[in-house]
Each structure stands twice: as structure tokens, then as C-alpha cells.
Image 1 (cartoon, helix red, strand yellow):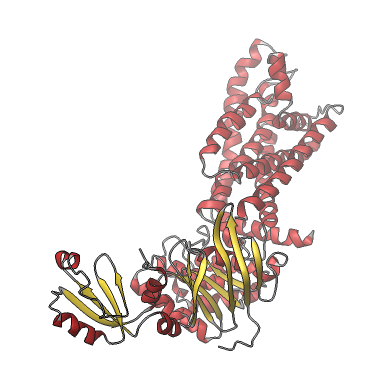
Image 2: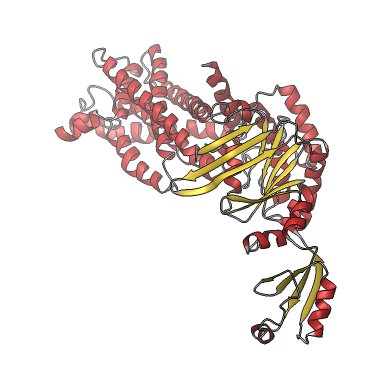
Length: 311
Length: 260
């Protein structure tokens, strides 16, 4: 990613307040052309409020924000002409057919009819909904509706596509199909901003991430950088019986850089998980289950906030 | 103005796309409604009320009296209904406006587009009503066509006021109150079914202050060719003011509601 290119979204001290409540607290970030930029964080962290300010759907309370080089306060109309928005909750037009949804949306952007029809054909192909073109929206599955919403967001050939939790509520198969489409979109050079509370989604799609918690950005970097910086190489997950766990009295001390206690298991952060497990056995601690794995973004989040991403 | 007018026609086009699937049903009911009303009330009840006192309606038959009145009242009902649940759906349940506002269109285009659409619906329904009145033989002058303009004004007034109300509501509970305590009393007490002189003085003054009454008076005058030229400018000014305030409030309400 080039840092010298002008950023598509530039935010400094960006703040959103609803009365007394601070939804976004003076955050700084830059989204560069061609990036797949992710906002990772639990529900209520301020991701959606940030998205809505970028999309000119919600006024900025304080700080500076520029989107595709313009100011949302004064040039919302011009900015919106160059954005594609996939909202968290589907808002397809259920009184229109699949095809009409795209063609009508094109009209809102003042795209001439002939161009609109051509793009509609192409996009229905891209999101694999060509066979459903004449159908009403309502009988479509959740995954199909999401794909149609993505097609709709691309009708104006946007410079920047904003996706707010694109796969929340979808089954695994539908998620993978959607990821595949987003990945192709990225390969075609589109700039994406994605919010998610799924770490696998962030790892799959994003090349730059900011982690949000309680209205603030608590970390930023590529998925790999974040893991290197905030977690160890490996994690030993231990499951212990209730009695054993209650009477540990520091029996695990010194086995790991850091230990996280989750309700159902303990996470031991170490660069060599197998060796730590051997030491657990040497100390005659009775283990009901053990797993050594590589660190993930979930661990990064846990280390930064002491909480899991998906509760 | 073109900056706003053009996007507003997009909203109209969207409604037309949705409507064209059901237009024949909608038009059928638009015919059926006045036909039934005029047959039951005008001919049925009319035969009874006319026989007791021939001058009760200023020398008019009951059919002549209520026909134009119901035409104006129907515009009010069409306007209020189209501006309640359908608009709330697009704000909250279906989130259509959220989707539209992600495009270069703004809330003003939405309000003007919806009013344009509702105007089209009102003129359609009123034209059918007028045709039915011709069939019943009570239209006295070609100037009756002007009644369509009056009805349109009544419709825009009620429609915009209802849109303004809808933008302040968190759910649809408020609508039943509006229909029960607002629209139904206006329907009954605006000189539609009987002359206001039948009412006690204070109630009559109240009826005078409501918008539908002025629409009923103008439409009746134009359809039966007995317009009171002294009172007409006053009625018209009232309706214009009502519509202007309504459009202002609807525009302001939609902007506030959608900017959260």
C-alpha cells in the first residue's frame, strides 16, 4: 500500500456525539486508493457511526473529515455520487423486481437508461443473480439479498464502496460466496471500507485494519502486524475441570507471557505452545482438553480490551 | 429549481414502477367507490330526505348536494392514507428513504417526489369521480373541470400535513388517532352530508375553520355552477395557505427525521 497517494478518506479528530453520548471519540485514520480497509470491533464500538459519517448519512459533530477529497458538510451530494453503500440492514425495494431495483437505483444517480441496462446485466452476472432478474425481492434468501445490495452499490461505478457488516446473519456458505465476490471486487482495484465483528472476515478481506473499542481506535495495522505486535506467535488453549481450575493457586505461573481467563478455557500466550503444554504435564496439572494454535485477531482484541469480539 | 425538480421525478418514477402492477385494481376501486356512495346515499337516502323538506338543501336534490362534497372528501382521504402507512414504511420498515439518501438525492427531493406522486393519484381518483358525477347527471357546467384543481389543492394540503406528522412518529399508533379524531370528524362535519347551518353556532364556527369545508364549498360551487364569487377567493386563500404550510412542515420534518 502506498502511503504517498492522496487518501480517499481522511479523518482527524473525527467525533460523533448523540447528546451526551459519545459514539465516536476523536479518531484519526486514512484510507488509500485500492485498499481494503477494515473497522474491527464489538457491537457498539462506533463502527457504524463512523461509516454513516463517511457516507454523508449522519452529520459530523467535530473534527475534520474529507471523503473523495470533499467535505461532507458542504458537498454531500457530490460525494454520494461517487460512493457505493451496503448498509447493515437490507433496504432493497421490496415492491420492485430484482432487475428494477438496480435500474431504478441507476436513475437516482442520473445514469442514462441504456447505460443502466447494460450495467444491470453485467452486475447481475457478477453477483450470480441473472436467473432471478424478474423475481420479486422478498422470496430471495438472505445471501441473495446481500449480493443484490452489493450489486446495487456498484451501479454508479463508485470510487469507494462502504460495507457495514456485510455478512452478519448469513450462513457459512452464503458468507463464503459473498467473500469471494468482494475479493474479486478488490482485485479489480476497488477501494473497500468494511466493518465487521468477525475476525475471520477481517483476516480474509482486509489489508489494513483499525480496531475500535468504546468509540476509540485502540490499534491499527495489517492483520499480520497486529498479531505480531499485540499477541504471541502461538496460543495454548487449556480446558480444566472446575475443581482443578479453582485450586490452581499460581500453578501455571511462568509458563506463558500472558494468561487470559475465559469462562470455558484458559488461553496461554507463548511463542512455543507445545513446550508450554509439556510443562503443564510436568507440573501434574490435570487437563481435560488442550489445543495449540497460531494467534489470531481475536487474541489481539482480547489482549487490547480484555474482552471477546463476539459475545 | 431544476436541481430539485429532476430528482423529485425519480421518486415519482419509482412509485409508478411499483404501482403499474396493481393499477387496474386501484382504478376499479376508484370507480366502484363513488358509484356505491352516490347510489346508496344520493339515491337511496336522498329519496327519503328530499321528500320531507324540498328546500332543505337550498333547492338541490340530495344527490346534487353530496356528490361534489364527497368528491372533495375523497381527495382528503386518498391523500391522508397515501401519506401515512406508505410513508412510514419507507422511513422505518422498508427503509426505502435510507437507500435513496445514499444516492445524490436529498430529503427535499423525496418530499417533493412523494407529493408529486400523491397529486397524480388524487387527480386520477378525482377525475374518475367527476366522470361518475357526469354519469349521474349532476354536473352543470364545463367549469366543473376546475374542481380538479381545488381537489388537488385539498390533497396536497392534507398529504403534506400527514407527511409532516408521520416524520415525527416512532410507530403507527398515532395514525388511528389521526383518522378517528381528525379525518373522520372532518369527513362528517365539513358540509359534505348536510349544510353547516344545521349545526349549533359554536360548532359551525369550528367547522368553518377546518380545511375540508373550504374545499367542499368550492367544489360544489364549480360542479353545480353556482359558485359564490364573494366567498371563493377566501376559500381558495385558505387552501393555498394550508398547502403551503403543510409543504414547509413536511420538508422540515423529513430533513430532521432522516438526519440522525
